[in-house]
Length: 159
Image 1: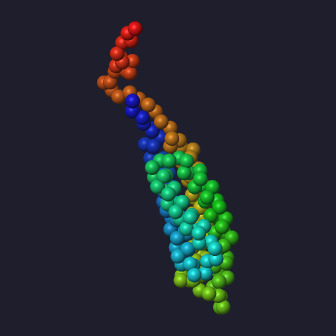
Image 2 (image 1 turned 45 degrees about the vertical axis):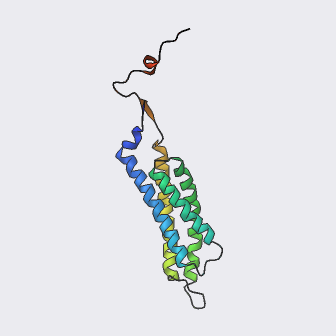
């Protein structure tokens, strides 16, 4: 028996998978830049941000290997990250005033990068759900040509 995945051969499905992987890597990169750039002024959120980077990198690996289960969880985490970015973005711009401790990267740039996470997460949710609907997990079994069926290969039953 040969197991095939007919939906994985379609160009639109391959493009969706590549897009999901790129969006996961872009999200992990943005969060990593913000974490490293704002390390000196971040308060308690560092562990969550590092966890997001690690989880997104793991999900990018699984999505690249056609794991459909990573898509739904990625979409849920993207919603949460988008909300966090939307709420925390203005805080970076407030920090860009006199009297605040300055991060390694300009606070205004960190604010822009934080707001940039929001559309990336929206795209990630859209493409992850599109990939989830494309049936990456559909398998078809077919016999190898020139091979006898299993019942013909078995020795006859003798009592």
